[in-house]
Image 1 (cartoon, one colour):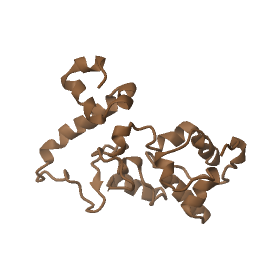
Image 2 (cartoon, rainbow, N blue to C red):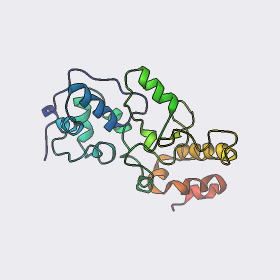
Image 3 (cartoon, rainbow, N blue to C red):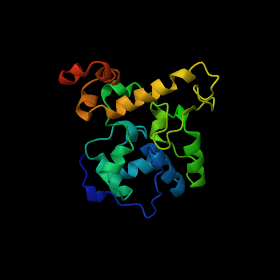
Image 4 (tube, helix red, strand yellow):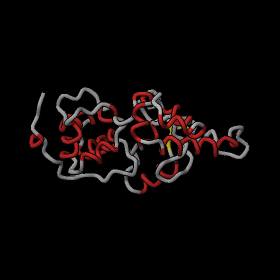
Length: 198
């Protein structure tokens, strides 16, 4: 169904997103504020939407524009709150719901009146450090980090794990979209791989 961008009416009150907030989380917070279901709020911008998870993973070619108009922001800001730009090889590392959390950011969000906010990094399975404050992510079920204490058997892997995260962030964008995440680590040990495609 083709809709004109003018069909989407902006909301009168917009809640400020927290840093690294997931789009479905931001939509849910607005739905709570307006007293409607999250899917109803999402359908205000995208009437054909069948699930809120679509907002995080599978935005259509014009969906970001409609959502941006609804929330009076830029399309780039909407896309930055999703995982839709991730390479297909990384999709299997994105959980359908939060599997970890940053305790420091969760506390900060609570103080800002956004206690229910979910950050995008909380569903990214390869994350061990929060991209906002650089603190360790904690398993959501146990509320502790596997690398949290000096007595942990994994403590000596902390620096290596952070190095792996930095490699993924620094990997050139065209390469990141054409190959799997694990291939990016080869670049450090074999610089000649930069010239070839996997």
